[in-house]
Length: 303
Image (cartoon, rainbow, N blue to C red; front, side, top):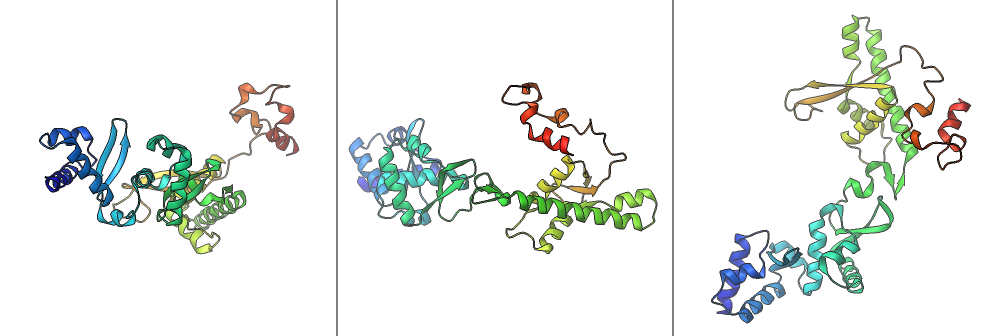
């Protein structure tokens, strides 16, 4: 009877891959006593064939694949529960506070389990740029999400402002060179204008060939830099339709960028930071935000 109960629980787990509750097991196996069901569940947990999860409705039992089963061999149920919570968090990781909330285990026990899992190289702690004094935990073999590491713009949680500025200058230099080549072609203005555009893929390729980055940059990273140039009024962007499979296109569209020069230089008053200040309404003399301690106002006056 115990063997049949074990098989039936496995069948139910395959039938409901997201997990089953004790109530589901009881409803599907009314002829088997509660003690026998408990023995069968504990046997599957000890053999590493089930994951024990906690949800709003109570405990969940979920079938575990053979790869994960081997990793947690010899671990107790509490350790398996913590591992499963961390696994479900993916590459964004999870704070120990949230692990405590989801597992309902004491903090001292959680810290002990985390250290044990780290020593086995099953999980790792990663510092998050969102909270410098806090660490998130994720599976050992996962690459942390950009929201955790800050992507290419951060190194050891420090924003690489100089690196960003170098990329900013080089991207603009490439687009300026493209525009200059188009002007020197002496063709009609429309052809010159179209020739001055470059795709984000072209800019990305140029930056990669320069070899100025120690980290691997994506097209998304380069587009972030190009967006800052747009905000500075140095570059404009247009989007065109592109054939499927065209290098640099996404969903049948391609972003093109070109360097631009203002027709007339803006007057000093227009360049005043107050016109674009997001906290203009909160700025007043004697307050926490005031013209006398505004670094942007100081820079403008010096200019």
